[in-house]
Length: 113
Length: 111
Image 1 (spheres, rainbow over the protein chains, first blue to last red):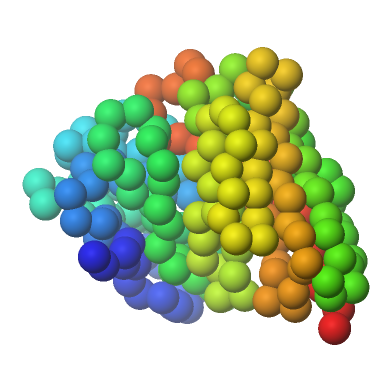
Image 2 (cartoon, each protein chain N blue to C red; image 1 turned 180 degrees about the horizontal axis):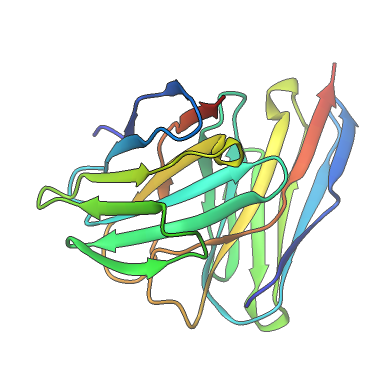
């Protein structure tokens, strides 16, 4: 079956703009989580959604937000982009309650100029 | 919060050599995963191993949860094994879906 799909794969924005990233989980998976990867901070957890509810949130400013739809697809939004938001954004899905085994997509690489 | 430490941070091997990567964690966990990040950035699942030992071809992993560490063994390394290896844990106090990652081990296998 298809893996985790993230779109777009690459994008370039300028400071002050906003961006929306999309993630389609593995069919049947109800949990979607988002991570940011930067050279300086490594892989950091952003938030996790399960059945359209945010179940867990990392330590990021309110400019970072997300949502999950009834079909388990998820979007994350970053408003008022800053240079430091340049990163690889990874989405992961898992099957059920609790963390379980996570499967990652190929990521969306965001560059902020 | 929980701390996850990986060692060594960098490793250079000659093709055919064996290696052991270590992951220490500071608190009890529900599960632990090992990943290999490919050159395009995707995290490839290697092992989901909250405890015990698993093997998959030339790779194997062991987690000793009571002593809070996990080991990833790579035997007869190949150039395609190059990349960054991450361990990630799900802390026992988690509500779910949140992995805490180590800083990774960057492996370079020379022909």
